[in-house]
Length: 328
Ligand SMILES: Cc1cc2nc3c(=O)[nH]c(=O)nc-3n(C[C@H](O)[C@H](O)[C@H](O)COP(=O)(O)OP(=O)(O)OC[C@H]3O[C@@H](n4cnc5c(N)ncnc54)[C@H](O)[C@@H]3O)c2cc1C
Image (cartoon, rainbow, N blue to C red):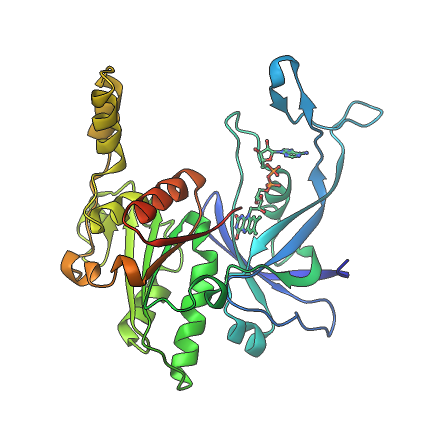
């Protein structure tokens, strides 16, 4: 079992009420173990709402609060894994690990046990976080992308975390003279422009062209501002990928499948009507991007929203591409 240590969060940045980036520095004079971009670490806080699993009649699972003798919700330790968003070279040079976290909120509006506690942290006050001194995981380019000429990374929401680490590290290694002929394309989607964390960092990496990297950011709820931003695309990641691969949108396919079954297409058509149609950033042509997605030499690697990842898997495998994902 890895040793538990207490780190300090010395930096917090919020892009919305539910999205945050924070940096953790290690306990005392210790250093974090070395790692590869794409790996994760287990983090813990000790003042989390505690729940227990209950299986109701009919198999419905619920997680009610654990109560103390006075009937008040009990608090205690909750541990989860988090992908590292900093690049290995940054940790080596500056000592911190960076994490990109979303506040979990369920359908009843109840906040997640650990993230509720994390989102109460601040560098000036409540800034202690327990970490397990072990960095693990095989969601790394050497394990998932070895031998492929085209690597298509698809990050939705905080699923960008492993990919920002990879992009920064590749850029750093290219600056230090290391290079290969692999073409990297990153599709990055969030709901709004404000939630598109690391947007400018990724544009800067793309602009420097120290390695072959194309960045395709998009928002699924575009505002007027976004229509005028030439560097920003529109549409959900799965639909942007489908568009690039010459496939119908997921919602178009749902209508077609419902019609083929002879079912009522009213609801599916209403969903399609509301779907934001994919559009690329203005400086990128569909032909340029398609050239980077030859099925026999490409791997699609994704992390983020499970619904989106399922459809990305379908799109990749239908086209004959290798598919890899990180399950959270
Ligand atoms: C390898 C890996 C990397 C990850 N990286 C990131 C990352 O970079 N950023 C990020 O934001 N997230 C990441 N996650 C997800 C993260 O680990 C947490 O699952 C997430 O933050 C929610 O934690 P929470 O305690 O706030 O929510 P929870 O309270 O755990 O709620 C989440 C779900 O669990 C259910 N639940 C509640 N109580 C229990 C219980 N007692 N037992 C079982 N289920 C229960 C809830 O109903 C809810 O549906 C990663 C996960 C993995 C596996």
